[in-house]
Structure formats: structure tokens, C-alpha cells
Image (cartoon, rainbow, N blue to C red; front, side, top):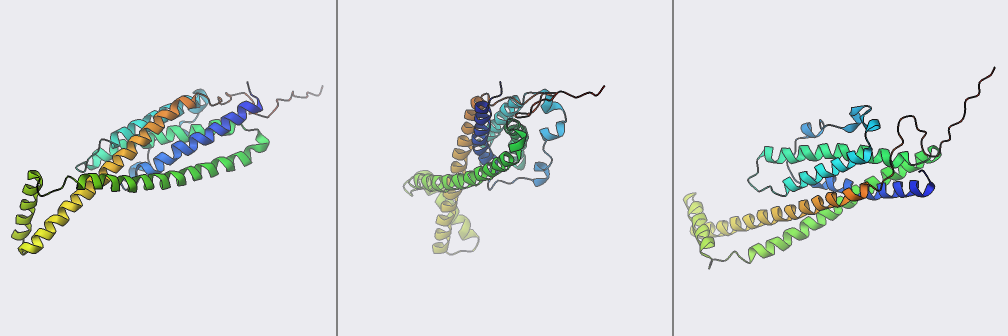
Length: 251
């Protein structure tokens, strides 16, 4: 069934999904160490040839969203002691999910548009994708900053010299800086500065974890809506808005 209403629903839903899903990968690796060599060599469904023509692109989008959600889940379990390989694995999975999400999504969206309107629809789709990335960067940066301040205030309320654990740590730091040649007053200031930096790092980490969990839930929530997208015409079927004309054979 290919009606203007179905085509409008498909392109509109594809644009909404693009805003939600494109914002996450752009911001998911913000401030994390990631090797560009690995990122530029991630598998891409565009290189699979005829596979997208034989498999319903909607299932590829579902698989991509699931991979992205799992990658965000893995990144939400990272700590300050995470090694390069602990960071590389979820980033690799995320890159794989990105490839399985955006190429089929654009294919499904544009295949529902008549050929005479394909240029306008492609420009609109790319514009919305860019806007989605900009919104994602702004939103995650805002949530990251506010989350860091919230966690820092909560953690700082527990840093008190009346706490035995904090007092022991403070005395250890003072002794360490004194052994390095600092006088007692300077060593105490350096100890407090070191404790403050520890609180800042933990607050930033907790804020990142909150954002990663939000992004994971966004990808998981998108999956049911993918099934409402119109299917891509199979091989041999005319695109939307194009009539098949009978061949004229001269006798």
C-alpha cells in the first residue's frame, strides 16, 4: 500500500528518528579517548552491496539501535581506571550500530518520496540530520555541565575532616607533599586541592554515566517506532510516485 499519507508518515517519522538517533552518536563520545583509525574503518552497510536490497532495512535499523543501546550501556559502566581497550570496545560497537542505522534510515525515508520531489526531500532530510546533531551536542553539553555541578555538590557535602576516611586521606596527602619538599602550610593547601580535584573527576564521571544511560534508553525507545516506517520497494518494483509504462513495440 503506497498512498500519500503513508509516504508522509514515513518521511516524517524518519526525520524524527534521525533527530533522536543522530544526536546520540555525535555526543556519545564527547571527551572520551577514541582512535580515529578504528572509527574510520568500522563496517558500513553501504559496502554490503545487494544485502540492503534483500533484507528489510527496518530490521537493519532495529539492529543498529540495539547495538548503539548496548554500546551506551557498556560506556555507562566505565570508571576512571578504564583502560584503552575498555573504551575501544563500546566505541567499536557504537560505530557498527551507526552504520546499520543511518544508511538504511535514509534509504527508507527517501524511497517513500516521489522522484520529482527527491531533491527537496534529500535536502530536508540532511538539514534535519544536521539540526539533530546540533541539538544533541547542545543538550548533552548542558546536561553534562548541570549534572557535574549537582554531583559535585552532593559529593562535596561528604568531604569533611570529621570523616575518618577523609581525615586519613588528608593526612596521607599532607605527608606526601611534605616529603616532596613543601612546608606544612603549602602541603595542607595542596592536599585540599588534590581532594577537590578528586571530587571534580568523580562528579564528571557520574554525569557522563547519567548521560550514557539516557542515550541508551533513547535508542531502546526508538526501536518500536521503527516498525511503523514504510518498507522500501523491493528489486523490480517502481519507486514511489513513478508509474510503470507499457513498452511500445513497432511491428
